[in-house]
Length: 262
Image (cartoon, rainbow, N blue to C red; front, side, top):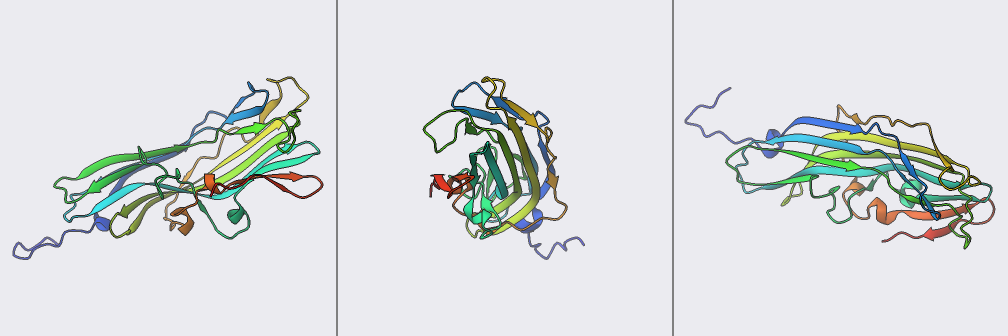
Protein backbone atom coordinates (compact mmCIF):
# COMPACT_ATOMS: atom_id res chain seq x y z
CA UNK A 1 0.00 0.00 0.00
CA UNK A 2 1.35 3.43 -0.91
CA UNK A 3 2.26 6.10 1.64
CA UNK A 4 -0.24 8.75 2.58
CA UNK A 5 1.63 12.00 2.01
CA UNK A 6 0.83 13.47 5.40
CA UNK A 7 2.40 10.48 7.18
CA UNK A 8 6.19 10.26 6.99
CA UNK A 9 7.25 6.86 5.65
CA UNK A 10 9.77 4.97 7.74
CA UNK A 11 12.71 4.11 5.46
CA UNK A 12 13.49 0.43 5.02
CA UNK A 13 16.29 -0.98 7.14
CA UNK A 14 19.54 -2.12 5.56
CA UNK A 15 18.50 -5.73 6.26
CA UNK A 16 15.27 -5.25 4.29
CA UNK A 17 16.75 -3.29 1.41
CA UNK A 18 20.03 -4.99 0.39
CA UNK A 19 19.60 -7.11 -2.75
CA UNK A 20 21.87 -9.80 -4.16
CA UNK A 21 21.40 -9.42 -7.93
CA UNK A 22 23.55 -12.35 -9.01
CA UNK A 23 25.85 -15.02 -7.55
CA UNK A 24 28.30 -17.11 -9.56
CA UNK A 25 30.48 -19.90 -8.24
CA UNK A 26 32.65 -22.48 -9.99
CA UNK A 27 35.84 -24.53 -9.86
CA UNK A 28 38.04 -24.20 -12.94
CA UNK A 29 37.93 -27.17 -15.32
CA UNK A 30 41.72 -27.29 -15.66
CA UNK A 31 43.18 -30.32 -13.83
CA UNK A 32 45.74 -30.08 -11.03
CA UNK A 33 49.22 -29.42 -12.43
CA UNK A 34 52.28 -31.19 -11.01
CA UNK A 35 55.78 -29.67 -10.87
CA UNK A 36 58.78 -31.98 -10.45
CA UNK A 37 61.44 -29.37 -11.21
CA UNK A 38 62.86 -29.56 -7.65
CA UNK A 39 64.92 -32.48 -6.35
CA UNK A 40 63.75 -31.61 -2.80
CA UNK A 41 59.97 -31.18 -3.14
CA UNK A 42 57.06 -32.06 -5.39
CA UNK A 43 54.78 -29.08 -6.00
CA UNK A 44 51.23 -29.14 -7.28
CA UNK A 45 48.69 -26.48 -8.09
CA UNK A 46 44.97 -27.24 -7.96
CA UNK A 47 42.30 -25.48 -10.05
CA UNK A 48 40.78 -22.35 -8.51
CA UNK A 49 37.47 -22.13 -6.70
CA UNK A 50 35.84 -18.82 -7.65
CA UNK A 51 32.87 -16.92 -6.24
CA UNK A 52 31.46 -13.54 -7.20
CA UNK A 53 28.31 -11.62 -6.35
CA UNK A 54 26.66 -8.48 -7.71
CA UNK A 55 24.99 -6.57 -4.90
CA UNK A 56 22.64 -3.58 -4.86
CA UNK A 57 22.30 -1.36 -1.79
CA UNK A 58 19.58 1.32 -2.04
CA UNK A 59 20.34 4.72 -0.46
CA UNK A 60 21.32 4.37 3.22
CA UNK A 61 19.45 6.97 5.28
CA UNK A 62 21.34 6.77 8.58
CA UNK A 63 24.96 7.17 9.67
CA UNK A 64 25.70 3.50 9.25
CA UNK A 65 28.78 1.73 7.93
CA UNK A 66 28.34 -1.74 6.45
CA UNK A 67 30.92 -4.06 4.95
CA UNK A 68 29.73 -6.66 2.44
CA UNK A 69 32.03 -9.51 1.45
CA UNK A 70 33.13 -13.12 1.60
CA UNK A 71 33.87 -15.18 4.71
CA UNK A 72 35.15 -18.75 4.39
CA UNK A 73 35.61 -21.64 6.80
CA UNK A 74 37.13 -25.10 6.44
CA UNK A 75 34.76 -27.85 7.65
CA UNK A 76 36.88 -30.91 6.91
CA UNK A 77 40.51 -31.63 6.08
CA UNK A 78 42.33 -34.81 5.11
CA UNK A 79 45.81 -34.23 3.73
CA UNK A 80 48.03 -37.35 3.73
CA UNK A 81 51.42 -37.85 2.10
CA UNK A 82 52.46 -41.52 2.15
CA UNK A 83 56.07 -42.70 2.12
CA UNK A 84 55.86 -46.38 1.19
CA UNK A 85 56.23 -48.66 4.20
CA UNK A 86 57.79 -45.93 6.38
CA UNK A 87 54.58 -44.09 7.27
CA UNK A 88 52.89 -40.83 6.33
CA UNK A 89 53.01 -37.13 6.99
CA UNK A 90 49.72 -35.30 7.43
CA UNK A 91 48.62 -31.70 7.75
CA UNK A 92 46.00 -31.61 10.51
CA UNK A 93 43.72 -29.11 12.24
CA UNK A 94 43.66 -30.69 15.73
CA UNK A 95 40.45 -29.09 17.07
CA UNK A 96 38.59 -29.85 13.83
CA UNK A 97 40.04 -33.38 13.68
CA UNK A 98 39.01 -34.09 17.29
CA UNK A 99 35.48 -32.71 16.84
CA UNK A 100 35.99 -29.83 19.30
CA UNK A 101 34.88 -27.37 16.60
CA UNK A 102 32.76 -27.80 13.47
CA UNK A 103 34.66 -25.31 11.30
CA UNK A 104 37.72 -23.05 11.37
CA UNK A 105 38.29 -19.61 9.85
CA UNK A 106 39.95 -19.51 6.44
CA UNK A 107 40.57 -15.77 6.66
CA UNK A 108 43.74 -14.27 5.21
CA UNK A 109 44.93 -13.93 8.82
CA UNK A 110 44.92 -10.12 8.74
CA UNK A 111 41.38 -8.94 7.95
CA UNK A 112 39.34 -11.19 10.26
CA UNK A 113 36.75 -12.43 9.61
CA UNK A 114 37.02 -11.62 5.89
CA UNK A 115 38.69 -13.90 3.36
CA UNK A 116 40.56 -10.82 2.08
CA UNK A 117 40.06 -7.08 1.67
CA UNK A 118 40.75 -6.23 -1.97
CA UNK A 119 38.15 -7.66 -4.36
CA UNK A 120 36.59 -9.67 -1.51
CA UNK A 121 34.85 -6.80 0.34
CA UNK A 122 33.09 -3.50 -0.22
CA UNK A 123 32.26 -0.93 2.49
CA UNK A 124 29.26 1.41 2.32
CA UNK A 125 29.35 4.49 4.54
CA UNK A 126 25.94 6.10 5.12
CA UNK A 127 24.14 8.32 4.64
CA UNK A 128 24.18 7.83 0.86
CA UNK A 129 21.94 9.66 -1.60
CA UNK A 130 22.18 7.12 -4.39
CA UNK A 131 21.95 3.37 -4.61
CA UNK A 132 25.29 1.55 -4.57
CA UNK A 133 25.92 -1.33 -6.96
CA UNK A 134 29.14 -3.37 -6.71
CA UNK A 135 30.74 -6.79 -7.23
CA UNK A 136 32.68 -8.72 -4.59
CA UNK A 137 34.76 -11.71 -5.68
CA UNK A 138 37.21 -14.23 -4.29
CA UNK A 139 39.23 -17.24 -5.38
CA UNK A 140 41.05 -20.05 -3.62
CA UNK A 141 43.34 -22.90 -4.57
CA UNK A 142 46.12 -25.09 -3.12
CA UNK A 143 49.78 -24.74 -4.11
CA UNK A 144 51.83 -26.72 -1.56
CA UNK A 145 55.23 -28.38 -1.56
CA UNK A 146 55.67 -31.99 -0.40
CA UNK A 147 59.14 -33.36 0.34
CA UNK A 148 60.30 -36.34 -1.74
CA UNK A 149 62.04 -37.69 1.35
CA UNK A 150 60.62 -38.56 4.77
CA UNK A 151 60.18 -35.17 6.57
CA UNK A 152 61.84 -36.31 9.83
CA UNK A 153 64.86 -37.81 8.07
CA UNK A 154 68.17 -36.12 7.24
CA UNK A 155 68.20 -38.09 3.99
CA UNK A 156 66.52 -36.69 0.89
CA UNK A 157 66.14 -40.18 -0.60
CA UNK A 158 62.86 -40.07 -2.56
CA UNK A 159 60.28 -42.27 -0.82
CA UNK A 160 57.06 -40.32 -1.41
CA UNK A 161 54.52 -42.79 -2.84
CA UNK A 162 51.16 -40.97 -2.82
CA UNK A 163 49.36 -37.75 -1.93
CA UNK A 164 45.70 -37.68 -0.96
CA UNK A 165 43.74 -34.58 -0.11
CA UNK A 166 40.06 -34.00 0.64
CA UNK A 167 38.90 -30.64 1.98
CA UNK A 168 35.45 -29.10 2.36
CA UNK A 169 34.59 -25.44 2.81
CA UNK A 170 31.60 -23.20 3.45
CA UNK A 171 31.76 -19.73 1.92
CA UNK A 172 29.31 -17.03 2.95
CA UNK A 173 28.40 -13.71 1.37
CA UNK A 174 27.86 -11.52 4.42
CA UNK A 175 27.01 -7.94 5.42
CA UNK A 176 28.32 -6.71 8.79
CA UNK A 177 27.44 -3.43 10.52
CA UNK A 178 30.76 -1.98 11.70
CA UNK A 179 29.24 -0.27 14.75
CA UNK A 180 26.79 -2.89 16.04
CA UNK A 181 28.33 -6.07 14.55
CA UNK A 182 24.88 -6.99 13.22
CA UNK A 183 25.55 -9.75 10.70
CA UNK A 184 23.40 -10.66 7.70
CA UNK A 185 24.04 -13.86 5.76
CA UNK A 186 23.13 -13.12 2.13
CA UNK A 187 24.30 -16.32 0.41
CA UNK A 188 25.90 -19.66 1.32
CA UNK A 189 28.14 -21.79 -0.90
CA UNK A 190 29.56 -25.23 -0.16
CA UNK A 191 32.49 -26.67 -2.08
CA UNK A 192 35.02 -29.47 -1.95
CA UNK A 193 38.47 -30.14 -3.41
CA UNK A 194 39.70 -33.74 -3.79
CA UNK A 195 43.10 -34.85 -4.97
CA UNK A 196 44.98 -38.11 -5.51
CA UNK A 197 48.53 -38.17 -6.89
CA UNK A 198 50.33 -41.48 -7.28
CA UNK A 199 54.12 -41.36 -7.08
CA UNK A 200 56.79 -43.87 -8.10
CA UNK A 201 59.91 -42.69 -6.22
CA UNK A 202 62.15 -45.09 -8.15
CA UNK A 203 61.52 -43.31 -11.46
CA UNK A 204 63.69 -40.38 -12.63
CA UNK A 205 62.80 -36.87 -11.50
CA UNK A 206 60.17 -35.48 -13.87
CA UNK A 207 58.52 -38.88 -14.43
CA UNK A 208 57.48 -39.88 -10.90
CA UNK A 209 54.03 -38.39 -10.30
CA UNK A 210 50.70 -39.11 -11.96
CA UNK A 211 47.34 -37.45 -11.26
CA UNK A 212 44.55 -39.93 -10.47
CA UNK A 213 40.78 -39.49 -10.23
CA UNK A 214 39.05 -37.18 -9.61
CA UNK A 215 40.74 -35.15 -12.36
CA UNK A 216 37.73 -32.81 -12.62
CA UNK A 217 36.32 -31.36 -9.40
CA UNK A 218 32.70 -31.42 -8.31
CA UNK A 219 31.21 -27.97 -8.89
CA UNK A 220 30.25 -25.81 -5.86
CA UNK A 221 26.70 -25.77 -4.49
CA UNK A 222 24.98 -22.40 -4.01
CA UNK A 223 22.49 -23.29 -1.29
CA UNK A 224 18.82 -22.43 -1.63
CA UNK A 225 18.61 -21.90 2.12
CA UNK A 226 21.36 -20.03 3.94
CA UNK A 227 23.32 -21.62 6.77
CA UNK A 228 24.36 -19.65 9.86
CA UNK A 229 28.03 -18.74 10.14
CA UNK A 230 30.02 -21.02 12.43
CA UNK A 231 31.32 -19.04 15.45
CA UNK A 232 34.90 -20.19 14.76
CA UNK A 233 34.69 -18.82 11.21
CA UNK A 234 34.60 -15.31 12.68
CA UNK A 235 37.64 -15.42 14.98
CA UNK A 236 41.31 -16.35 15.26
CA UNK A 237 43.04 -18.66 14.62
CA UNK A 238 42.69 -19.24 10.92
CA UNK A 239 43.42 -22.60 9.29
CA UNK A 240 46.92 -21.62 8.14
CA UNK A 241 47.98 -20.70 11.68
CA UNK A 242 46.26 -23.66 13.37
CA UNK A 243 47.48 -26.45 11.10
CA UNK A 244 50.12 -28.91 12.30
CA UNK A 245 52.35 -31.17 10.22
CA UNK A 246 52.53 -34.61 11.82
CA UNK A 247 54.75 -37.57 11.00
CA UNK A 248 52.86 -40.80 11.64
CA UNK A 249 55.27 -43.74 11.27
CA UNK A 250 54.10 -47.31 10.60
CA UNK A 251 55.63 -48.20 13.98
CA UNK A 252 56.26 -45.87 16.90
CA UNK A 253 54.72 -42.65 18.15
CA UNK A 254 53.63 -39.73 15.97
CA UNK A 255 55.97 -36.72 15.84
CA UNK A 256 55.06 -33.03 15.45
CA UNK A 257 57.17 -31.80 12.53
CA UNK A 258 55.73 -28.27 12.26
CA UNK A 259 53.73 -26.95 15.25
CA UNK A 260 50.85 -24.43 14.98
CA UNK A 261 51.79 -20.75 14.58
CA UNK A 262 49.53 -19.41 17.32
